[in-house]
Length: 387
Image: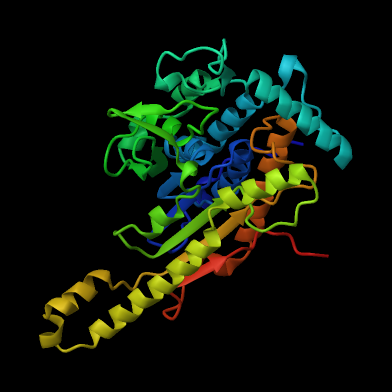
């Protein structure tokens, strides 16, 4: 059954964990992005509303919907997006009946083939005639699919004026096609529009590059599939609670056939080494805190030295809590899981995100500030306990 739609009560919404900043970090992963919708529903139920949402690719779309709506409307808007892009073909109703894994595998494969052939409703549609057989009328049309449908849908669901007023900070990552450089469009430094969100999700050769200020941009996942570093490297350092939502699991089994080879390389490529980034940041932040403690003990004449001032610019006593939420694919999902936009699969992903986040939030230590001895805490509490 579809997850129950809930709106947090005013009482719940008034309770905020004791952190200076709450951030939500959303990785790219196409159709897997409905998992992030379930994650956000659980956060909203708990009255946890991020100050800063950062995303790449489908994570940028979900992030824009969150930042571009009032907290009371966000879950409903996310549901509306995912229901519209996963509309069953030819008006066939979605029937949540139980099926075995083998049947599920073949239903998913057939639905994925249908998406490749005919597109996803309200998201993308094939170009006709195909650009592979005819000259394109410009670089912005060099793609297999036209994304006008999702441009129109985001125009309905996202209030960019609200984003640009700064109620909730939004950051989306993209890749400059000409230079190959990765960069972030951030509502704190410049106004954002639907073009910035579509640029973050313009994965070639499926989707076309998006032109912004004379430059063309592709999906941020071409270079890096998670915006965690953008949050961690912010010069405005604060005690932070960060929910990092990964749609690709870096850890997996040795492939047994060519389809599993394709899947495994996708998982490794798009997982973006979140654990490595977390470990590196833990070491760096531990050093910053040590510098801060040491500088506090220095006599005034030493503090005024140029070398000391240089160290002081990097010293920081902030602490960070990172909650990792990782989608762990089912046995019947294959390498097409990022473009298999069926309603059944959307509901499964959403329910998994909801359950994993509720399980994570059931640990009270997550929502408490770190001790003075801890610079960075990393939790991965969403995985069900093994029997």
